[in-house]
Amino acid sequence: MQRRQFLKTAGLGAAGVAAAPFVTSAHAQETYTWDMVTSWPKNFPALGTGANDFAKRVEQLSNGRMQIRVHGAGELVPALEVFDAVAAGTAEIGHSTPYYWRGKLAASQFFTAVPFGMTTTEMNAWLYHGGGQELWDEIYAKHNLKPFAVGNTGPQMAGWFKKEINSLADMQGLKLRLPGLAGEAMNGIGVSTVNMAGSEIFTSLQTGVLDAADWVGPYNDMAFGLHQVADYYYTTVWNEPTATVETMINLDAWNALPEDLQDVIREAARASNLAMYTEFAYRNAQALETLVDEHNVQLREFPEDVIQALYESSQEVIQRQVDSDEDSRRVYESYSAFQKVIRPFSDIGEYAYLKGRDTVGA
Image (cartoon, rainbow, N blue to C red):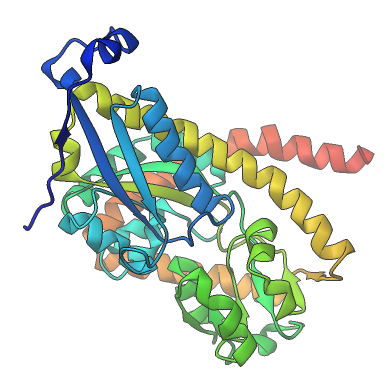
């Protein structure tokens, strides 16, 4: 493999030693400068700025010993080529989401979102405590990559539609942007799906290339102006009850880091994961109010026959996936086993509380 020069060495001097007295290894005299390629437009709200925030945390926690230069989609590589670029060493690190790589690594989809699957809290618990991270490490290592969760959008909307959906018949033949397992499930009920970079969605809806599109949620969707090209916003969360955002690191670059800087990246990733999730929760609430009150967006839920068909199709898609790919089978066995363990408490905990709160109108 053709590799970049991963290390840039420079003396810290007395001031550097004083600023970080806990660093005692020979690596204390080394600084590291990495390039990060992303799937997001530069500085795009929450996703692009999340990449910036992660890079800033790494620099701060390392006392400046490690710097990450963030590049927006298309600056060094196209949005959907981040995986290959980092694996090959074109850049040391990437910022994207795992289900974009389903054509290269089918099992990656389970680390972003599973239709009718776990919530964000449940997903993070699986990654941090249920063996999810270890499986993720194992399958990405085959592609010379080391992954971490660095954010989450929380539950995503079902998408923008140019016509109202009143029955399953209305879904037939629609052209929809929707990635991952959910996209395959939509194919199973008569919808034609594609994956494309977020920056292409507006024009594709405007010109009729697409009849409908999912992106993320109110905050990011409004930033792209999707309310200007589609009238109906479907709120039914089935496709992505959670959506993990990842950083992936070239494994050679990762192994070249001293242990203390590896720890810095781990902790920066955990902090970024929480920060992005809470930002989305707040910003989505603000944006949804704006979309409804100022832009007269029509909120809708899918009819019952559509949801039932999507559930059945999702189960068929997942079964085909695990039957045809050994990594997918092992990952999904872990995922589904953990979901069975954690769901009872989710049901008697947060879900029961939300139903009770709704009952009394609080």
